[in-house]
Image (cartoon, rainbow, N blue to C red; front, side, top):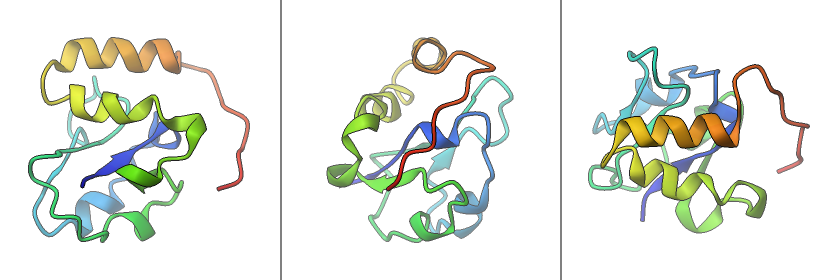
Length: 105
């Protein structure tokens, strides 16, 4: 199993998760084209270090992603296959400059 980064990370990219990841499996922090961070499903060791440090509660175990953010699961996987197409999907799910209503977790 891997961890998934969902919509609350879009346009935030805090990086606290990157700092605590023992295997450096979180990508997108240094590329301005990426609007959120992505966890490599092939590199993640399921240690959960990233989840509690996320300031916007955007990181979930894959089998626990809230229903309203399930669309972000394939986006995390797709990033490692086709970054350009993934960026387009992110833009379509959350156009730049939009905000989402706060949702309880």
